[in-house]
Image (cartoon, rainbow, N blue to C red; front, side, top):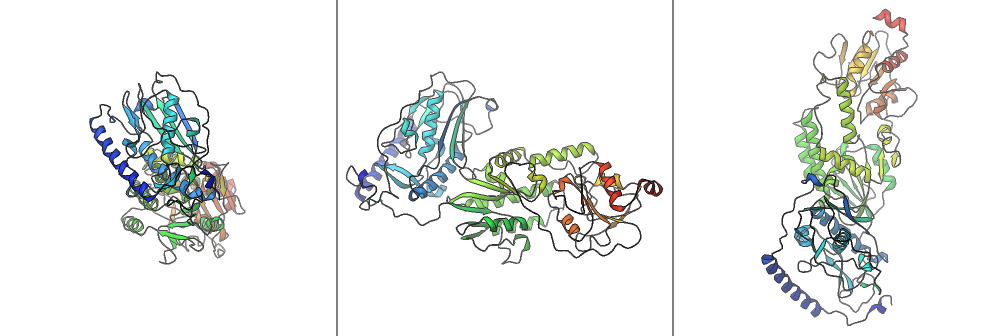
Length: 593
């Protein structure tokens, strides 16, 4: 039988396990006693970003180790648990700054790994076997810390080697440090202040030390690989006589979780084309069941559907009290997205090794570490916040009198978090051509789903009607449209409030309409020269009705018959496009003026 050749001593018994727990409890009490009187303090740490001296400090050591090292599929459940445990521990380690001369203690920062704190069964090396244990797998982090401490030349205060080498681990080169709450610890210090940066991508654990000055000790040379066979694994050794032996799990250990918000038809079709029967769908509500079209994702074919009713109801209640524009609204949307992201994260199990996530949830999930150790794709409907704010700043420079172009900017830390997550993302999925152009190497460009619309009735004689399918906002190109229409004998149809001022359209013949089926009645053209437009549904509906469309490239719709694209902010190009669509030449324009 596989694994039986590894048996070199008597199998552990339940009595042995009980004796181990008693001894461990006594050792823990002794460690508490010693820590209380230990002259070496563990305090004096500050969190990430507090020390400005580390902003440009050099990297003095780096350790990079593989996350996935299973020898067989049977071992995968413990690796999935290990990665989840590492994800939790990294929140307590990443960004910790240790003052000069202070001692870093692994357990002082990570704390006890318990189920109440979210830790799950991972793999632990005990008595020559890899066994399932809550918090198991944290030794990969302590190994990396020890490896980097040696590389940086730090003073090792306490370190314990593993009793057996796990293939693929740093124990193979003698750079391992086992830990066991709380009496088997890893502790080290340096003569200079340093910061720990701990991260995981989908394949690796990456740990770095930054220090203002290099440590005085010489760097340790790499050691040669240790000889010997690897330990047995309770999920694959087939030593059925052992009481710890576990049958291969039938649980899900490699599923995709889809973390969604408001329904986007293009994404709904895409998800159905890539989902598997073992995957989980997270949605605010079951929109089809509760007759809520904005959440009516297709739920068929998923292993499980998880909803966040409370977070959704809170958002709905608060949104009723918001203005349709302004800084308060934008901040409320960010807060609601954070609440939904946190609700999802609490139920995002270790088995979700890949995530497909709505863009508005990404910065919050990234900041809190929930995407570490996972591959993920982003469903993008908007420009990245950093790019968006740059465009708004440029537009505000053109129109310093605008009341809306500078009314809101996101928290810089959130902007940085989103940018870092988008850089790490495996794919960017979007139907918006302007967004896709920002990610040429990993964008998955979807086709817009054209809405069903009746063909527009023939235009009646009289003044042409130019429809501006938006509220009067600087970011929608209101200033450019006003300049381009000056002197033209047309009726302007506006679909929203005048947020740039009550007198903004003074001198123009303006007709007010609500967005809806009647917006395009009698329209000669639909014009949206926006600096920012994330949801060009109105333009697609106009085109489906056979109405000419003039839009900026920033609106994200492709070139197609009946659509004229112009650069945002280019009044001359916009004017030329208007004249061409209306069939007017320059002498006619001069006569009308």
